[in-house]
Image (spheres, rainbow, N blue to C red):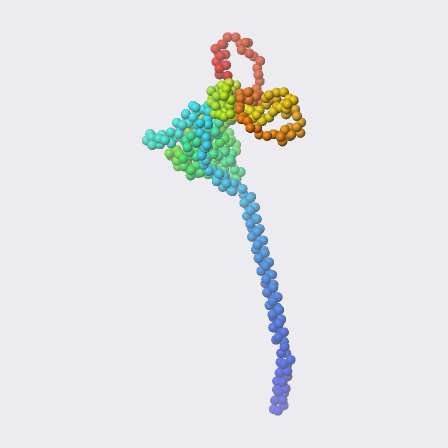
Length: 410
């Protein structure tokens, strides 16, 4: 028993010594744990930074993808911008700015009588005008007349070119037509003007383009819906075309384009009225409108306006420019010939030394005579014209017919 107690005592003392010798180990473990924790925190911070930078790059890439997506689909954004551009505007011109169309203006005013006496239209069961089709050669004033109608009646006008309604994606062209009519309905009493309507409403039996056929069908449907939603005729659709016969026949009947107005080339009296409207200012007191109207056969309104601008430019040149002292001549033609013969270096010096003189520009008939020699009207540019060598002297009798033909042509 004594030996057992000694052995147990020795074992306890040995364990106590081992505990004393191993006492610093817990201190080293605590230090290592602290360093390990610091290292883990640094790793966590690095992970957080890397994840945040990845998120930022992802959002940037996402925004770039969205930008590219919007750029890849311009039709929707273009459609929205186009619809936003369909805002009604009030015209600044009226019938005072129109010349040579008295009969046409008379007829147009009577078409808008329902704006004044709508009650009588309803009592007598008369359908108001829903569409007016203006047709005639290029430059005769169809677009200008549509704006003058809006200005004379005092209603806003929504103008759209037919080619603006054409889209490349199937179904969007028809949607654009619906949106145009919806914009007119939202405006109320107004004029919806569709220029060059023949570009999208050609005859379906001769048109092989399926999309164009659908656009014609949509135009017809929009007209019919307009007559149902607007029975009072507050919205009047005006179309303009150079090729009346190319339009689909369905648009020229029913409650669509119920009236057609032909605007042809003006005669001498018409040209006289147009010239009086165009050439109001800066004319010489003895200006002969009759002579100018007589010598401009085949000129439409656009041609007369261009001729007037050219003549006014001649008058301006006559006031601004002058020949050198050693040259002879006293008109702008002589100066233009002088400049044409000069090298570009001399013309550049002349232009650099050019100053605005304190003089008034007065347009004379001579300026128009010079302009007539340079300008060719639209009707004479198309095709080829030949001058026959047969005269009246070679034709016997028919004196009355000769006089009648001379009056008609001249």
